[in-house]
Length: 403
Ligand SMILES: [Zn+2]
Ligand SMILES: [Zn+2]
Image (cartoon, rainbow, N blue to C red; front, side, top):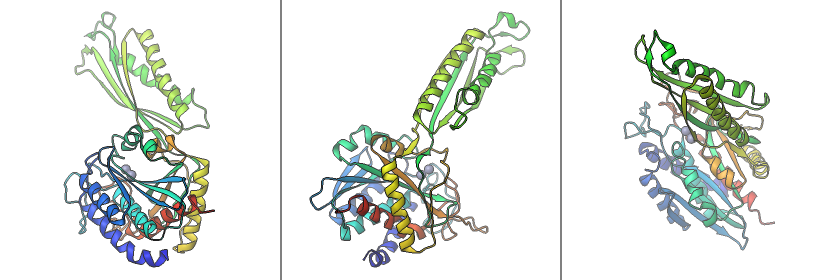
């Protein structure tokens, strides 16, 4: 019985989680974490592949004679942040912290591998994907580029993230876009510097840059469907040093956020068009560097239906008072699970980390897990480990059911 197994497994997984919390590692540097993960999987007798996308680990578990396969994915990296919690498992490294709960994600997926290897009732193959570098540099993208889905053919892929502010043990399962795509841009305007008293002899980049900031706002207000969501924010504008000198150049920077790729493409093209217009109007020359970040994370209909069904069963079975929320708006944050979900139909769910925080300490541990992600006092809530493992196990059994 999974229930009996969980009673024994959950404390061990919590201990594993606290150990990697104490030893956080940044993007593509998750050597200790990956080694511990791989050793655990080896111990279960799974087929383990190390060094996938440098520090990633993929393990496979097969049952029966079926050729169907799915992927379950966790992320392993920490953030460049100094922890302010003072509990026993606080980070041992200044400037590094598991402030996004990837320690919990890694531990829960290991727990699921453990449970499935012992009593999993399914027909086919489950791939356990432990990816590096979710927070920066897109480890998920590197995995896809390195041929994750060629080496490990699977028909669906699933992800899960803890969600502070949502009741512990509840699930958020959203159809379609769930996280935003994030791009960044840097715009350098070059004119002709000169005396502020003789503007006709100069080409003024401050004026051109100001017009550019204003014009860029038309991309959302006039070029984007009012029922669609987008953000164009200019967050930097550097030009000039003196009150009587017109500067030679100005540099602007900012971010673009969207919930679908066609709109992302359209806004990039719009940015380029507006820059050309400003060049022509003001006689400056403009260099635009537009950098694509993570694409929007889009949940596909098939896997989302399965995930919702399974989450509902888990909540009922565990009877911990959780709910499945289907009407949550997407987050304008970003997630590199997006690359996996672009390559295969996928579903990314939120698991409530708790919605209370201790006003006296602000510590995440034992306080209900309400402290926000990326906060120096955040901690993954060990109380949800059993729910997370049960979800993964039930999902694998449902997606690869024997009938
Ligand atoms: Zn994060
Ligand atoms: Zn995260």
